[in-house]
Image 1 (cartoon, helix red, strand yellow):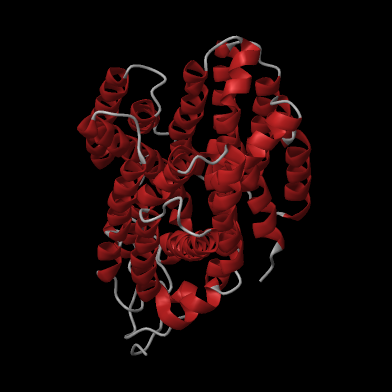
Image 2 (cartoon, rainbow, N blue to C red):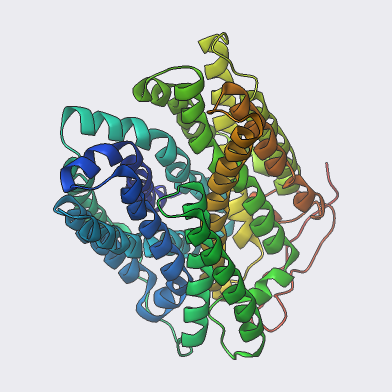
Length: 483
């Protein structure tokens, strides 16, 4: 496999994922410097997530209209400009607007980068390529907090954003030099009503969940915004049925493989989205560790994520998507539940070993589910599948943090005191159960699902029909009886 393309894309996406989490540990220093409170400054985190939710749905249309390579380079440029604007911000409004600008670039970088990879990689090499592209999403949230704390402690918080400038410039040069040329293709006019409705729906849900879990505003604001987002989503569903060219092609959900990858993957991400929120808090509040000490412990999961890419393609080729994803969701749910048994008396080698295994399994699962989403989607529909998968990922991760925060809040209300170690244990058990339910969506899959991508020998020759309403056809997948 040509690793140049996925590595270039992975570097750019790592910059985005690092930046979106590294700011969390630096909020107090930034707030002091610009004359506001850390709680108010959490609006900057929310503004970034809202920007992602608004502009991700349009990313596929933009890539088709202007060329995926061009949009990817432009997205890096916008992200870098937003980073510089953050570094020079001297007030809360300026910082929030700068983070929103960063989010516009990030909204295009992730889905368009994935689209470039899908279109430039043969299907039988897609799992191996996705294993490189998955690393930023796993490593960024775990590495971000300790890196942010280190930079803020020994330098200044401005370097959190300024370091993106050389990385972004190198990324744009590498993209220009090595990424394949992608011409614009004939696309229908932009579905403006769909863009407005999907933007309100996605941003309302993400903003509402973020405000409820990270109360920068009164919780009632989050609830009202969430309701507005859900209503806009219902209206969009009706709009998509009658629009000639809807922005988000929901007809793709008629494809069982795509539906299982998106819905099952979203349930899994709820638990995974909760872990970077719960684990550092438990280590600091329940164990009494410093932020840097807790960051060095959680970093082991990132090491597991990196190591798993060496065997991921082989594993899916031998066992197939169905078996690996079923076992992966159950085992990963079990590792999250085991976190609920951690205590200050737990030996660090045991704790680190369990975190390492959890990193392995999550890396394997994300690589597989990201590749499976495109396994039986025609090339013409790839740009339509990309924003759908990206929107569901953002919502599920935000939901994971909101669920975790809600569980902790309910626990404190029940025992009428501050957070204790048992509250975190309860939260880990519940989010682990949610992640494990993803297995039900993969049990429904046929044994040969995605075999053109995994190379696994399935049970019977099966013609892959495109979703109803599409004029494109996919190549037949040849497979045999299961091993």
